[in-house]
Amino acid sequence: MVTLPNEITILGAGLSGLTAAIGLARAGKRVTVLEKRSLKSDAGLGIQITPNGSAVLRALGIWPGSPATIADAVEMVCYRTGVRQLRLPLDGGAKGRQPHLLFHRNDLIERMQKLAFAAGVKLTFETEVKRIETFNDRVNCIFKNGQVHRTPYLIGADGLHSQTQRMLNNGGAARRGHYVAWRALIDLPEKEANEDNHVCLIHAPGHHVVTYPLRDSEMQNMVAVKKLRRARPVRHLQASHKQELFKEFANLTACHTMFDRCHDITVWVLPDSELSDIWYNGRAVIIGDALHPMLPFLAQGGNMALEDGWCLTQLLLSSDSIASAHQLFRDRREVRIRRVLRAADGQGWLNHLGSWVDIPRSIVLRSLGSVYPPFFTHRLNWLFDHDVTLPP
Ligand SMILES: Cc1cc2nc3c(=O)[nH]c(=O)nc-3n(C[C@H](O)[C@H](O)[C@H](O)COP(=O)(O)OP(=O)(O)OC[C@H]3O[C@@H](n4cnc5c(N)ncnc54)[C@H](O)[C@@H]3O)c2cc1C
Image 1 (cartoon, rainbow, N blue to C red):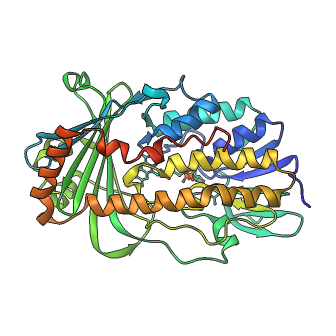
Image 2 (cartoon, rainbow, N blue to C red; image 1 turned 90 degrees about the vertical axis):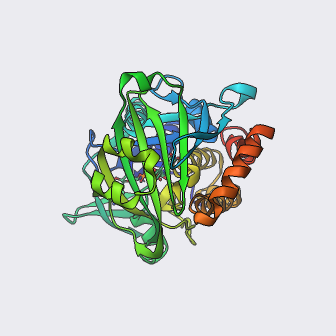
Image 3 (cartoon, rainbow, N blue to C red; image 1 turned 90 degrees about the horizontal axis):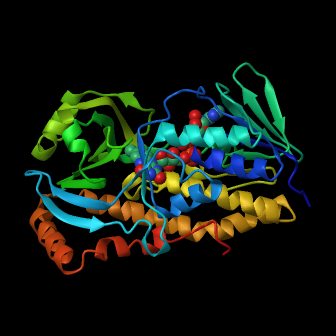
């Protein structure tokens, strides 16, 4: 029976890796995190943390106390006229539910890094692991220059192109995707910055756009998604420009003023949802995007990464062996992860229906919105009300 060693290595300082690092270090473990980006590098644009993720941030002591905006509602807007079709209040803070938070990713990652340093985690940046080998008594992380970092236990929180996932699953196929996403930031003029803090959702045939405010409404985050006719390979983020947005989203006239103000535009093919066959071996485990890349249409990839990081940490600390912690981790997480993957795929289908659905959708939205507005948010109670920090 292999018990949890005192020295633990985590590959990747994203949401899942930092959650596990903070928890394990606070429990007295000597935690090393290997991260390929630099300390100050840009971790991305905006991220929505839904109540299930906010519960983890609260338990870690990250929220309250971090610069985030609380979202009041989701609003659906007509893609041609910009007229609001439906407003769905998010009962953040009410009835004991955690708030729906809107973060600039850099603010969230920086705060998590600070807490990790404070807990004694050894965070090493600009350290890219090129290959991983596993043995009965250790795991070897091999760097580009051939140097080896040996560890008795590895948590692979290394995201979409995970080396740990590859090692566990003997390589694995290259990822492909059916949607392309453009992401950008928009500076807000002061008069608009005074509006309330809602997430805005715009559906058009085969396309959808999401915007929300960041940093006290100084700026907005925008994601514009188009469905592809055929799957394409997933590559790394690439820079894009406004002209591409105008061309690809020509019929979304309500968005054109906003497109004109976009900056830091990037584009990439979103990986299709997937759950790894093999989650762990005797000395290594994967969490977050490394385990289950998912479509972002319910904003759950990061939230699931937080849940995974928290859940695995508690099980490692409370189980009598690594093997039983791993088994319990799979038992506790698999049904929920599969349900979230299916729900995100389903939302993707709904968000990108063809033009035939335009008028019926508008009628359904308006009538359900006037008869029973909470309908749309209540159907996700199973997702948002799950608090992984409470005993099962
Ligand atoms: C358009 C879009 C919008 C999204 N919006 C949301 C949202 O609103 N809410 C939400 O919850 N989720 C959202 N997501 C998903 C979310 O970003 C991810 O699911 C989440 O960041 C996964 O966290 P992670 O810690 O598992 O992986 P990552 O955040 O990818 O972290 C992995 C880390 O590992 C490091 N790394 C990787 N390989 C190596 C290596 N070989 N050596 C060293 N370091 C390595 C990387 O540099 C990185 O820092 C969105 C995704 C997209 C594409």
